[in-house]
Image (cartoon, rainbow, N blue to C red):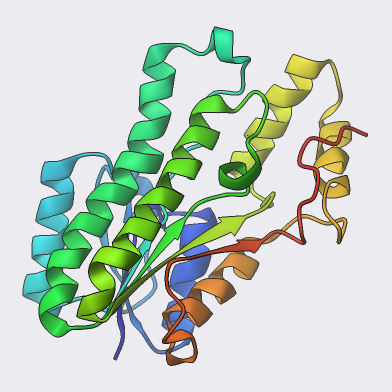
Length: 252
């Protein structure tokens, strides 16, 4: 039975991933910084409240996984925060560091500790949640975009280092995903630009070839594929699930 650890799985994309893997018969272990999100988990799931950017906490988590499961087959390094929505000259260093700590440091720490569990087994899959912001850049989202570009470089390096040990690494780049996090972004961007929430929402969709937003379940299905035997030679790849974003900055 596949053993899967998903960080940032209290809600949103991470929770959708957990449901998809569990539905596929996997053993699922989820983490979130908010213990309240882990209060009631489906039967059979394991959960740990942990800060993805805290190395002692992450080291202890992976030690617990090793003791409980004896190893790990799939890591979904998914923990992330939106960070500030502001012009770069208005972003404080504290906000920059808080955003990059969770999005970039968190992916590094999870991958680092997953590697030590996967190497002895000679197999494994590491999936890092990046973003189309890590491909195009986004105005008013400098810390987030920088971190999401950074995790792609991390992933490609992992693929090179860990490939000889039978471990694959890939990055998923969601487009605009329906959910509470993006609702916050929409509200802040609308205020910054003097627009309505609906104008900004429509603009995001208009910048894609398919003219639509993405659901967390769309991302979860890609995670299932990339961790499966059907993708056994897919590694070092950046795969967008975004309806083909061609202009991420359209405002309608």
